[in-house]
Length: 123
Image 1 (cartoon, helix red, strand yellow):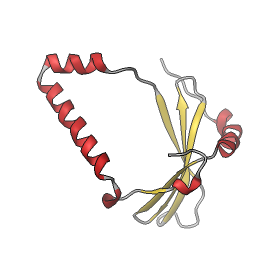
Image 2 (cartoon, rainbow, N blue to C red):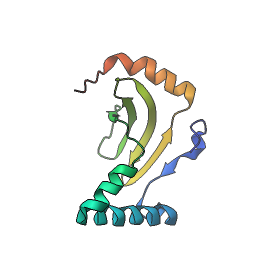
Image 3 (cartoon, rainbow, N blue to C red):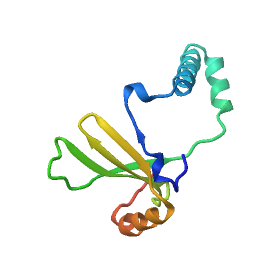
Image 4 (cartoon, rainbow, N blue to C red):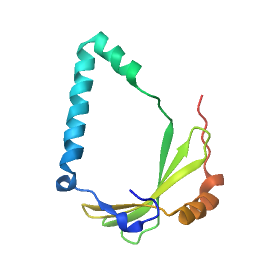
């Protein structure tokens, strides 16, 4: 998804997952189940993982006059150094959810506003 294109808003719902996504997820779950049954396959899976990264998602609930039916907010993604590295805006109305990445300039505003408000300590 292009980070600079807010028209890439995704509504998430049961029927809106693509077939490719479902197929890939099912394939990975089968792979994980096999790894649980075989120590050899589990070790092969672990050895094949290219890397990992700690990313913490912090959810900010913005003020709403009707929070039972309408909620909007931000997902802030922080790295293991506690720096905000990405953010998304979401809107939840009833069962409908829309999610959009922020543009680079909007992300800078969010970083400036929130960076010093939250800290992260990982031991």
